[in-house]
Image 1 (cartoon, rainbow, N blue to C red):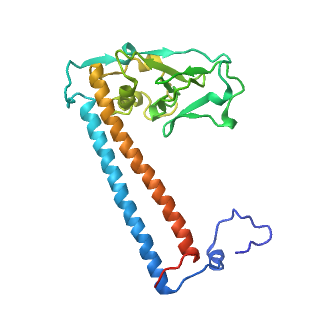
Image 2: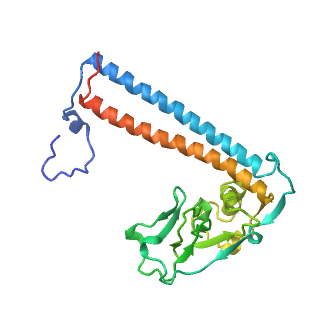
Image 3: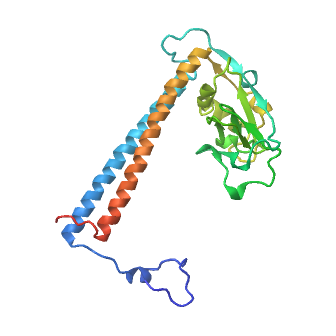
Length: 266
């Protein structure tokens, strides 16, 4: 397709442009075979996606049962207590003060958790950045109500923006791995969204979050529940990685089939 003088490549494709585009077209019987091959991949995707969705629903149902105490794990002993987060965790505000280099500046996203900051969004000073240690939690107080909170599972100490809230669990009372599942629960979502009606502008500092109350089991039961839900998460992650790998394989096959680099027998 040729562009007229002064015409930008960003210009919308009109029907006239499309009709002048030259493409390689295989014989009709071969077209049918190619379509049949690719439809098999599409059916595999549908089955894979259905399996992943079923695993996710199962995990959500397990969360509701296990985190509410309606279902006790095997060998569980001791009573559950309704607890304030503020009695099980504390705010951490230690500043970097030039202890760490810029490469250790991290941010928090809902999709990826704690991730390194891109160069172009880094600020000019790291003096007031807050330190974040293994198994501590960090969040942007203006975005926690849309899920932007994460537990740092790396081994090295890193730093986050000084505007973030950082807190840690008292691990003899609350396991970070257990809280990591609680913060994805309906109880947590109800608490952090109640005041802001979904707005990204509401600020929730640790003094506010400390008032979150939830049913808390004994430490050993916390550990068992976290292990069960961690196993569910890992299974779902593996399925999603498989989906990405299969999708990449299909794109490569499409490119070869639709350009004639691979021919099929009609």
